[in-house]
Structures are given as C-alpha cells and as structure tokens.
Length: 224
Image 1 (cartoon, helix red, strand yellow):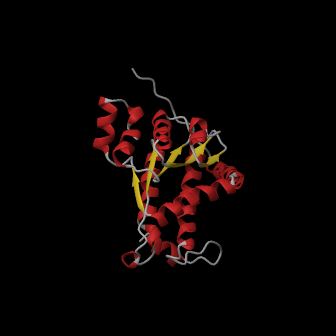
Image 2 (cartoon, one colour):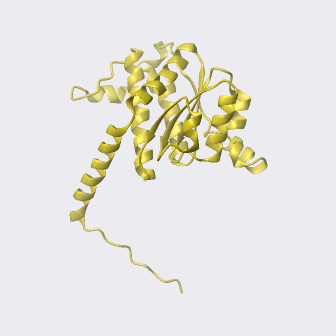
Image 3 (spheres, helix red, strand yellow):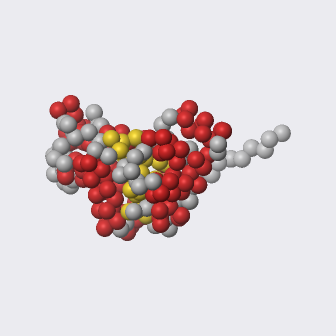
C-alpha cells in the first residue's frame, strides 16, 4: 500500500510576509544587474535590426518558452500599434519552436547539437544569437555559442548564477546573480520586456511610457 503524505498547510496569514520577502529579493536582484552589460546586449539587437541581420534565440525548459516569447515580442510587438504600416521588420527566430527538428537531432545525433546544427543550416556571419540559460552550463547552449563564435556571429546572453561556461562565449551578457531558478527566470522575463520597451522607444514605433504616466492603452496596444 502506498503511504499517503499530508501536504503542509501554509497559513494564509503567512502569505503577505512571504510575498514581501520574495518581492524584496526580486527588487534587489533587478537593481544588482549590470547596466552597461545590458546596454551592450541591447545594442547588438538594435544594430541587428537596423542592418537586417537575423537574431536566433535559444534556451531549455522555461528558457525555451521565454525564447519563443521574446521572439514574438521582437517580431510582432516591437512593430507597435499599427504593424502593417511599419517597415522595420525584425528577422528573429526561436530555435526552440520546431519540435520535429529538435527531437530528430536529439534522437539521432544527441541533444548537445540541437541548436548548433540549426544555426549551421540557417545562420550567416554577422547574425546574432541570444542564449537564455539560468545556469549558463547547458551543453547545447554552450555548443551553440561556440559554433556561433567560430562562424562570425555575435553572441549575447541572459544568464544566471555566475554565468557558467556561456559567459566567456558571449560578447555581452546580463547575469542574474542568484542560485534560485525561479528568480533567475523571472528576472529574464522582466528583461526581455524591458528590452522590447526600450527598442520601441528608440525606434519610435510606439510611444511606450515607463512610469506613473503609463496608460493601459499603451500596454494593450503592444499585446492585443
């Protein structure tokens, strides 16, 4: 007979304090991020857009989902409220989206090459790779960055912990200095939205406002 375990019941009265503690951690980590590194990362994306280069985004697990989300924001939301009149199209691809391709390479050749082989097939010198990894040590992320560097692509990263092996393979990287995967991935999500908002303002595709004067219409237009 399988032994049953009763879940620990957390008193409702403890939730506000838990939230306050968690929010304080998020706040501290956000303010600990390297601003110049973020500026360098954004410049790679901005210049890629202006030059008509392709940006490839890679990640695993929750970071794979964020890679898809970020590609959507750069490819669609960045165009603003009236995208059909905007000619500044971002050539961006998440390499996590094709299940058949990912599983074929993983099954026949090994999971380590699932990103590098897609880059080999589609990337050109001068393109860019965005690596999203909480540890920075995922073998397929490291292999993808190595291939990109060896073949003339620019490399940037949204990383966690101390950056792992990916850090030295990135031309620019923002590292969330935490060992908590939830906090790292959460901050990565905040950063992708911040980057999208900054590019909107920089490229004047939409008057997106950050601060108390922001109105719901701005955010609704960005994500209809």
